[in-house]
Length: 224
Picture 1 (cartoon, rainbow, N blue to C red):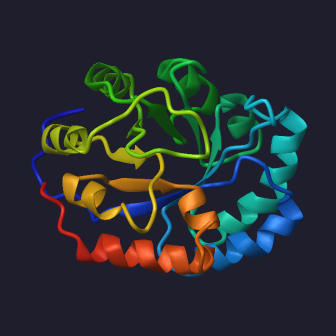
Picture 2 (cartoon, rainbow, N blue to C red; picture 1 turned 60 degrees about the horizontal axis):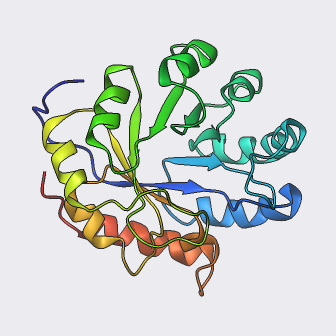
């Protein structure tokens, strides 16, 4: 982690799956979304009705069906919470929260060549620790109200500006992001917009949401 010295790449889309899905039924929806525009990564984030992480077999089955769809389109496939399954299933990476496991432990499990992303809420300290521990990206949020999960913290766009003006580790903006409210986060300096229901529940369909978000990210000027 070091002071930024060169212009950053344009902001890109980071899709997160719905928390509950039937993989075969979801496959065509995913294909349409990924084929509609640029998508950097897809995080498999499956939860039970009680908001607990889905069991291992559920994650394995979904990965078996959905990961080839993503990887065949050069979209990184990231598994939420479970570093062990990310390594076992040869996913591209893992995303861990502050209550899951430390970044360094996740790195030991998945190895040096896979992505490790870390939830940092609205904390500059947690983000700096994650960066020092070798995270490939830090995630800030929630920026807006979200129906996908109960956010623990509320983040303001200026944390993205501070981070991208200071460090080279990419940052992800997450939490309630939609076509209607994405632009300020791009302007603030987000490297990635993590979007779930803002795509899958978009009135005109997921493919239209991906196209619209790509257009916004292309048109908006980042301030870094």
